[in-house]
Image (cartoon, rainbow, N blue to C red; front, side):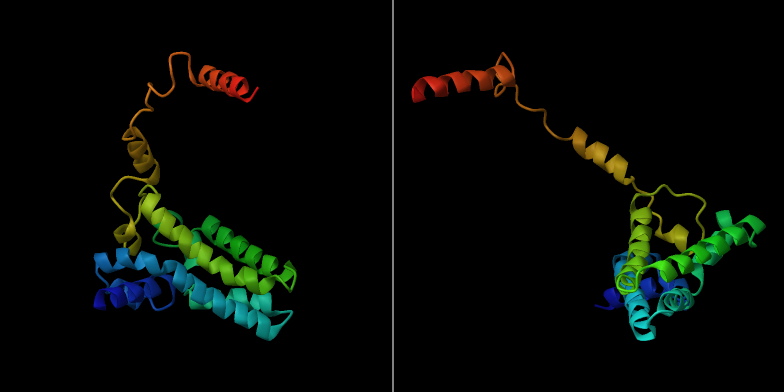
Length: 196
């Protein structure tokens, strides 16, 4: 039970402003914490959806800002520092500003009836994408917590190729000498003779 709580705490630290929990966690806790990423994203989305319902019309952009604050600004900071640069680059800052502006615009123009559902699901899907990248992506120039999360094992494509190569070939005896279509036509003719 302690390992589960440590993993949940690591996930919370990786995805929210409570980053101290992630920096003190072990590598095993960080990897096990990937299971909790969608749940943490769903919790952030629930807070955003409740803010949208409570505030009404201006709730969409306010909820996006609220999620940004709860995440500790990780998304824009990561965009502003491409390739794990030590400092934000001018292109990165423009990219981060455009991405955040796009989120604000999308939340503002979304029909009010759909805003809570969209803001509920969006952070969860973003967290799920991190899980997929950590398990199936190719390790780039990751450092820190990201480097600890990246698997050194095979990617999804490599695992799929390996599992397909282990499947036994289809049995030839069942196809017959003339192939599957000829066998089906033979059955049809036989069925017609017995029916007629």
